[in-house]
Image (cartoon, rainbow, N blue to C red; front, side, top):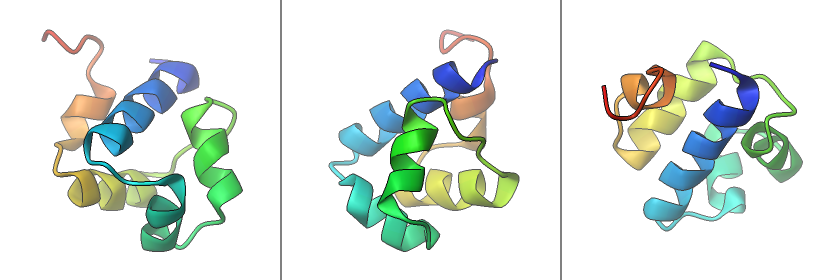
Length: 71
């Protein structure tokens, strides 16, 4: 999976959870600009950030990492 696809999934989960980029940034202790870069695929997400984000939005880490959402 590439960073752009991971970013799309992160954005989808954030919007579905009705969270702003600011709220996610505060939870992850990151600048809001970092969340924007992650969602656009221009910044890597480390494993701790992804774990904390997945808990925040109530989704499994596998949701973000599976090759296809249908799997």
